[in-house]
Amino acid sequence: MTDLELYDAIRLECHDKAFHCFGYSYIFEKRANLFRKVVYLIKALGILVPALIGATVLGYGIHNSTLIWIVYIAIPVMIIQFIFSLITILYKWDDELSYAYEAKVSYDNLYSKYKKLGKTPPLKYLDLKREYDLIELEKTLRNQQDSQHGIKDWELRRGMRYSLREHKEKCHGCEIMPLSIISTDCYVCGNFSLKYQTYKS
Image (tube, rainbow, N blue to C red; front, side, top):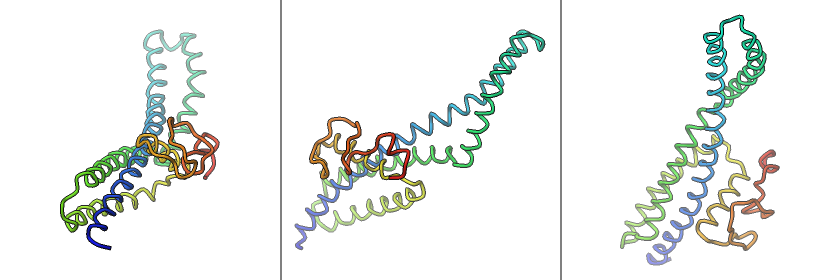
């Protein structure tokens, strides 16, 4: 291949890599939203229930009948909160939340870099190749970290559909340009509904 052909090939690669980074950013955005809700809810319950009991004692006294009913309600809630707190620790949901935030920002940056390099590349092929290789190294390191956080196939399909919709491109599987993020039966940009999230697919 000539330098001009290689030059054009890298620009096409930049578009392709930007497309996929956009999808990965969405994957980790959705993960961050989920983990944030779960982790914050568990923390809120851990503070709210004891605070409610304490406020009742301070306001009405320890022998008030209202306190008994609050304790009856609080005990099962506290048991559930304790169980989920253990699960949070065992599965490191706090770490997963932090990583999801970090990965989303990283993929947003990679998307911007690939997109910019593809649209306004240096004039010389060697300069373009040098910049492309630096971005590729950054992406490789990010992918290596991702491998420790178990991205599911259904997440990849959802990320694909989101990127197809945003870039107004047709799916290679169903030959349809998505207009929504609703799951379909397509094996490339669909099959990420709740039943597919329950099982490994």
